[in-house]
Length: 367
Image (cartoon, rainbow, N blue to C red; front, side):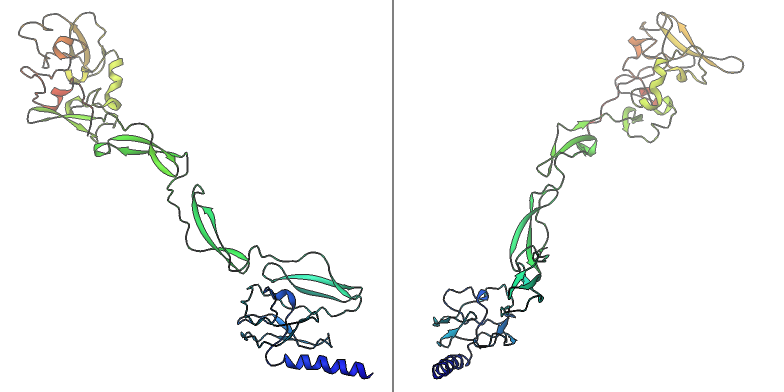
């Protein structure tokens, strides 16, 4: 009995020597080799009262302050007496509450903290006087708080997105850093050339638009305009495309195919007209050279093919004739009218009116 009393007094003396600021913590909260009396500001784990004799002592919360080592002997939760190494060790960041591992009664149950950040719950049941896990830790956390990472982002996954682990989940830190402007292999066509008169095909390569082939400048339609007695093309004239071919305003099958091209495949014989120029673009089916006349009859005048060699290419008439008698055309007399202006005395690009230009070749618009 006397020996037992001495042992109790000795243990009490050890305990009292540790109460001047040294408190014991549960072993797995300490990641510092050889040191077990670590207290760090902001640490919210719970600590057992320093009483190795009574394992059922209630737990008390950590006060959250950093306490320097006092150089005394430290009693750990498992009852082992270890010399203090005299160093202060930084907290391990992950704070898992101390767990009371005192003996339990059969059938008791509880839930303890678990998981990456200690925010999950682990069910336990008392078996054989010890706590045993039941099932797995229920924890939604996927990362360790405070960790960082970079992940792929952007249209083609070629960018980088910084992320921070907050409350166990990855949270974007700032915007995705990505220079890509398009989805790889997508295509588009953009305007190109002077005055955006052409089309440029492009394909998306490595997130950037790259020209696919050359700029294609398509001929633009319009009409002829006699400016200062010179035939001048007017590109993109609003009248072209209205469905009415207007030779008098300078439209022709080559300047405005949408309105006039259909005439060149139609036999003009018998077509209605109000003036000889209305017959200018019809297909010439008559044998030999000649001209069109707009024959006046009761009811409706009509285009009539006049076959004669008197005017086509003959001396004194070697120009593209248009007048009250009729009209020569490239189809009726190529010698006089092919790529030439109408009217006596007009050569090259000379003109007296818009209609004088209708048989000239239409120049492509290169800007």
